[in-house]
Image (cartoon, rainbow, N blue to C red; front, side):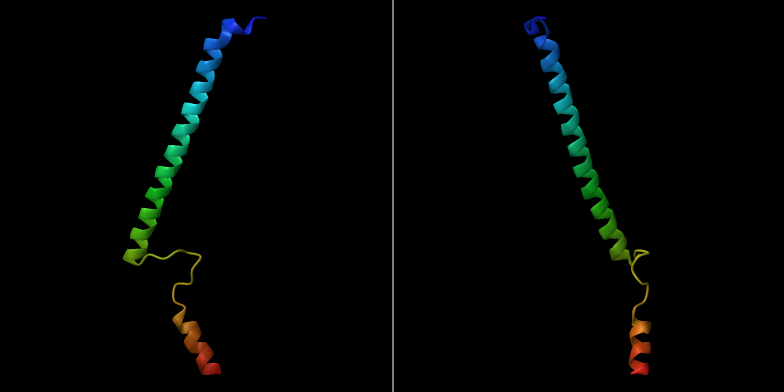
Length: 67
């Protein structure tokens, strides 16, 4: 088998793979920035995450009363 006959196909395949990976990296980077901006906007509006307690103050006040 003579590889010289297939150099064009090999180069095109590698170029396509590099282009696809580059586009995916750019897409993920842009989506990450967009999601961070959306999250910051929601936090500015007062929307909280479900994993964060909604109102930690009453728990602190209860602890002070017990002490």
